[in-house]
Length: 313
Image 1 (cartoon, rainbow, N blue to C red):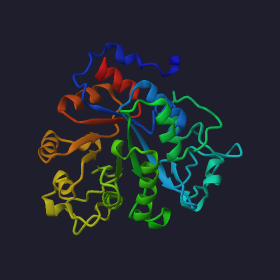
Image 2 (image 1 turned 135 degrees about the horizontal axis):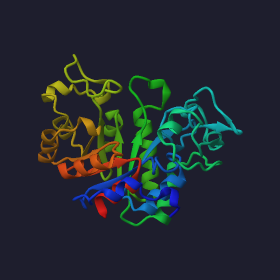
Image 3 (image 1 turned 90 degrees about the horizontal axis):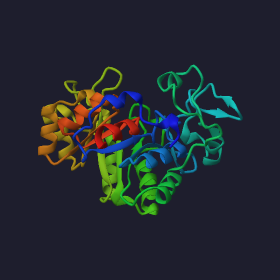
Image 4 (image 1 turned 180 degrees about the horizontal axis):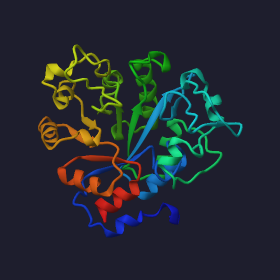
């Protein structure tokens, strides 16, 4: 392994965590180490030994499922013809051939991503991969136990930014089926409409319900009048404000809350209802260790090398 991707020095002082059974998700591959949602990042995550590759998807104008976090090209990440883009362009307004010309191999100097991940290794000339390419890479490089956590990136508040939820779900499910990995796949979303569609299309695929109750994102909307548009028609207040109860009502498999929102009481309730709990996005070694000790089932992290060192060594 390259020295630049080795375990962070702070880990040398840590005592190994208790939780061999906690699933480690490589967030966007290994976002802290390599350009996010790229084949090099997924290759690194596999080499490190993650249990699950976590990734984001969009659907192009010609129906190809590509791996990218935002519904539109980000000026912070995207170059075309060697030049940084200035205006976001919706993925569903571009063909796969057009998307393939985009270079996402480094973060824009001075931009938000570069400041947040200053040690991220740049690999110029790296294109946006398709979901099929990521699954093909995993088939060659990964163990047969490797799993996939695929997020559908769409918002009920911006319906023109993406394809419709049912179309989105059908496109992702088709790629997963073609790769023969339905039993090893989770589909997650903040917009629970796609998860309802997935359940109808492919019962073997597990569904994960993302939540946040922050001022920068609150898709639960507890205490507000009426149903949250994010929850597929459900009003969380009809469930006493309990997200686990709402997910159990929908016959979901996994609750995936922002890690600072999780309480021991909510975790216990989720487990009592038969749900797994996979938290996002946890990069601090102490927090990783504490959440594992609390009893979470999975941890999504930008630094899978850190989580593996804390929990497996």
